[in-house]
Each structure stands twice: as C-alpha cells, then as structure tokens.
Length: 218
Ligand SMILES: Nc1nc2c(ncn2[C@@H]2O[C@H](COP(=O)(O)OP(=O)(O)O)[C@@H](O)[C@H]2O)c(=O)[nH]1
Ligand SMILES: [Mg+2]
Image 1 (spheres, helix red, strand yellow):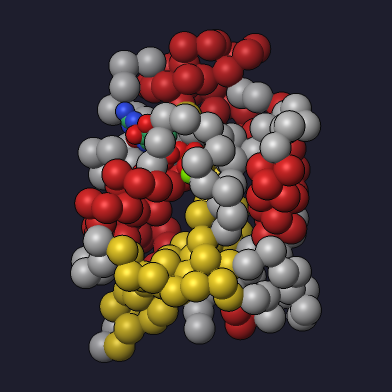
Image 2 (cartoon, helix red, strand yellow):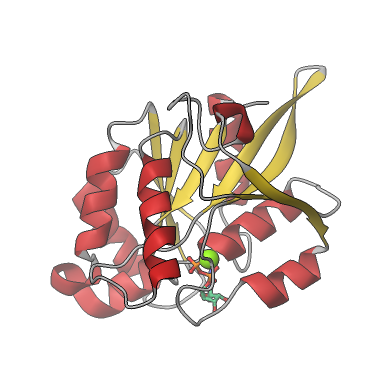
C-alpha cells in the first residue's frame, strides 16, 4: 500500500495543482484518484488511505488536463474532501507505491457551508494520522503581505500538529511569482530552513528536490 503524504494548508495555496502536476512529473499516465469518504479510520494509524480502514467512495482515472481544469481553482473550497492519488517511484530495481492525499483547505473562521466545515474537520483528522505532512504555503502571498500578516494563524496551527507526525516538510509554493522570494525568507525564518522546499506547482520548479525528499521517506 505504501505511505501517505498529506498535502495540507490554507485554501488557494496550490495543493491541488501541486498534486496533479507532481503526479504528471513522476510519469503517471493519468490521475488515479480515490475519493475518500467521510468515514473515520478504524485503526487510527497508517494514514488516510483505505489501508487505514477509511471508506472509499469512488475510484476514477482522470486525464491530467481534465484534472487541472476541473479540480484546480482560484475560487476557495474547490477541494472539499480528501482525495488520494496513487503513485509509484522506482527504488533500486523495483517500484514502491505511495499516495499523495489532497485535502480541503483550512481557514480560520467557521465557514457557513456545512460541507466545507466537514471537509476541514476531515483534513484535521488526516493531519493527525498522516505518515508524512506536506504543508503547502503560498510564498507569493506571504511576500506581498509581509512577515506580520503573510503567515496566517492557520499555518502556525498546521505546523503545530504537523510537528507531531514522523515527517514534516513545507512546500513554499508559487515561486514563479515575483514576491515569492521574499515570502520564502519569511517562511524559513518562521519554520526553520531545513524543512522548507521552494517549489512552483505551475512550472514544476523544485519538483526534482521534492521527488528526492519523497524517495527518502517512502
Ligand atoms: N502562479 C502560480 N499559481 C499557482 C501555483 N499553484 C497554484 N496556483 C494557482 O492558485 C490557485 C489555487 O490553486 P489550487 O491548486 O486550487 O489551490 P488549493 O486550494 O490549495 O488546492 C489556482 O488559480 C492555481 O492555478 C503556482 O505555483 N504558481
Ligand atoms: Mg484544492
């Protein structure tokens, strides 16, 4: 079954675009998507995958173009529930499977829509179980808003939970945008230089380093 890598972070940080383009980068033919139902894990460990006992709603194979068009959106809360993408990487002579789990974005306020609230609760549940947490932060927004406002309380909360997991990496995303360099500095200052990887989900910058990081953690 392999380990689960949970993508988590504020809404609009680029989690879904990262998931889709990283799968494409690893050479997958299409997106093998398992939508995970809102069923809590029975075992309570081993990630958010069905191996952990959570219910599976549906399995779909989605072409990358369709996924980018329909799943990625500037409008918040497009992703409302957990979706696992099954992937594999060559390791030595063989292949090792793993999954990248995309999650509903988190926000500070209590959202009016019950489905969105449920999605957030599910994300927090997954955060407490993930083998590896990939915390996605929009570095361009952090750069624009500056140190005081750029990092939302949500990112500090995610970091607090994520530090409890065995592995925790931060993807400083949108490095293709002009303000992102400054944002990267702020993020490193706040969360430590070692775990922060600069990436662009759009241009795939930094994907080689992420792949190397993932391979070490399989
Ligand atoms: N310029 C740029 N835009 C990005 C990048 N990653 C995501 N976006 C855009 O940011 C918006 C939110 O992306 P999405 O993946 O849906 O964010 P999510 O809510 O975290 O899943 C979309 O309009 C994406 O096209 C990136 O690396 N660079
Ligand atoms: Mg999303």
